[in-house]
Amino acid sequence: MNHNPAHNLALEEMDKACLLHPATSIADHLANGPRIMAEASGVHVTDTRGNRFLDGAAGLWCVNVGYGRKEIVEAVNAQMSRLPFFHSFTSMSNEPSIRLGDKVLRWAPEGMSKVIFGSGGSDANDTNIKLVWYYNNLRGMPDKKKIISRDRAYHGVTIGAGSLTAMPVYHQKFDLPLPQIRYTRSVDMFRDKPADMSEPDYSKLLAGELEKLILSEGPETVGAFIAEPVMGTGGVLPPPEGYFQEVQAVLDKYDVLMIADEVICGFGRLGARFGSEFYGIRPDIMTMAKGLSSGYLPLSASVINDRIWAVLEETAPQMASFGHGFTYSAHPACAAAALANIEILERENLVGNAAKMGALLKTRLKETIGDSPIVGDIRGEGMMIGLELVKDRETKEAFDLSLKTAGKVQAKGYENLILVRTLPHRDVIAMSPPLSMTEENVEALVAGVKASVDAVADAYKADRLI
Ligand code: PMP
Image 1 (cartoon, rainbow, N blue to C red):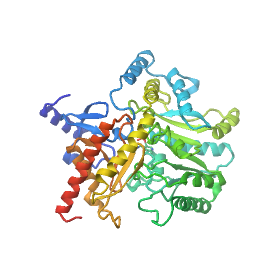
Image 2: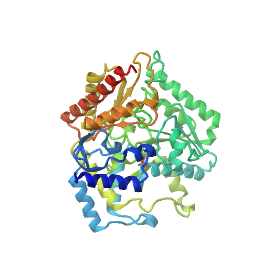
Image 3: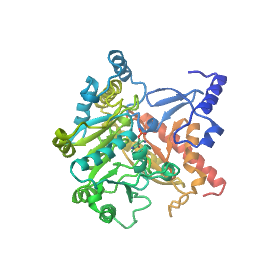
Image 4: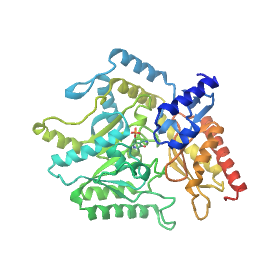
């Protein structure tokens, strides 16, 4: 690492001169420049200025096993030396991707049948849209193509996945969404569920809205519904009790496929292997990425169940070829990284640790900042926790978003040497640390979050904003 200030400045200027950063305010970036990360180990990341942060976000919800895992580096190194690349078109294959396919199916819920690999969550969701369309074309149902997503969902940014994403900033000026996409009411127990309504009744209400939408569109035109088990970027929103059971009953009734987007929730984040397992979801298609390789190399997977596979297999003799896939589908080095990653998850029982440390994190946050005047809600499952900031705890009145209250807490977090994330459309601080966190790490994260929240609350009091 280089602590030479002149060198850092040169790098920062070079960044501004040559990079367009994703999901970044261009004006802010040009004014304030980048924060350049240099190295990482365990649950800590160090920037080029020498600040060592506890990474309460696991990168972008993805470094499930933590940083600096030599086993992954060595597995990739060995694979790179042996066979750095080969494609999987036209029946070509390689050992790590075969073994990974087998491993993914062993981890997945019962009934999942085949895996097709990609490079990221967005391309996997585009693959899933195409699979829904393909499946229904093969079944002789060419009109059954609409896909229902949920308000405020995030499923990626490619043309298909970006259309499933339901946030204005990802649509406006990009001419999205595609015309085949619809949105239904989302889960939100903090802001949307009436106080006097039980969770099961709220689940019935939401499933009822989904059914109304399917009926108004015409069930013969609706191919699939997509949801994250716990909605992540949309606000860290867990489903109410019974939600997925109610939803799946509706989907079954109208022959609509269930796509579980497990990009964040998968590979242990909720303290179960998958969110589908945690909530008893029976997916027809699963989207996996992030925790699949813990971000060490880019990798995603679309996994289809027996029902879809049966149609593909049956119609195979009449098909020229399955006309989909990427140069890097089943990349051997990425597959080797993922295999080593999953071995670590298994060997260290990080799924169990996520359940334990996640519960501790939530409890300790409630104990330390549960009474803060600007904390409205502390929610989540396992290592996926959200903190919603409010102006008034009684009425749940939100702060004016232009105040960027969550952004202020995040900025204080940098001073307190913790990394947490803000979300695009409400004042929520998202925490999704590596699943390898220890009790000591949890206490350090909680202390950093408390110091940051308190600092913003004190400043707001002084400015009479609360
Ligand atoms: N689905 C979900 C639920 C996600 O959170 C994300 C990324 N945060 C994606 C899809 C898109 O993944 P990627 O950024 O790898 O394309």
